[in-house]
Length: 117
Image 1 (cartoon, rainbow, N blue to C red):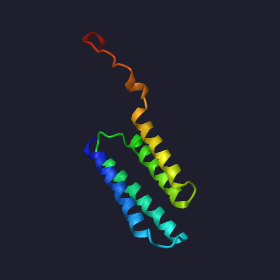
Image 2: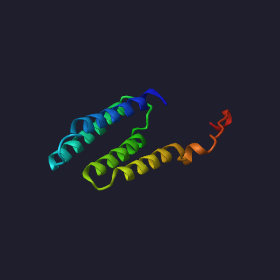
Image 3: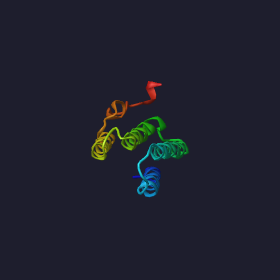
Image 4: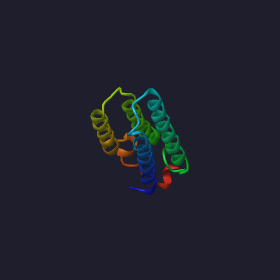
């Protein structure tokens, strides 16, 4: 795993620590839910800024993954899904990211020779 994804994971963990470390002992209210969603959106923005710094990263595909993780977090914060379902969906998302096959890169590259020009 390269340094970029370690940075992204550190941002995600930092956002979770701020969310659950600060608001763990606060009584559940709509204001706390809104603050937690705002923190999730700020984490998504920071992840975008980190990904944008690297010119050779496919920002669109990377933001699909990070956006799906943040959507799971927001749905769990709002109460649409439970923590267990969020964890199962997160592991399915990780499996998709690891085992997906890109049609273009799964084929061997075309051989280019001088006479093809």
